[in-house]
Image (tube, rainbow, N blue to C red):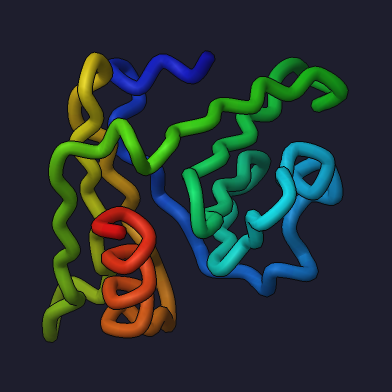
Length: 125
């Protein structure tokens, strides 16, 4: 599992859902769908209507991948922070029981308002 205490910030760039790792679709259960996808240089994170799935690519060849699933049912609180004039990144923080805070820093163009509405529906329903 990803050590969220040591790497509590994920600096991500939005990508098209079609460009997300094909492996993610193997983990999707019936009734679950991806609504947002992000990447770092090697790692990726997707948000579904039920959970967050992080793919941590390991090793020199990248053939070993650790997948961590963070179910919304374990989220106790979350926050979003919009980008500013000088700080062009927005942030998403989730607080999970037993794990603590996980922060996602989103770089580039991203519709934070629509994302917040959708994730709110997923978490609060």
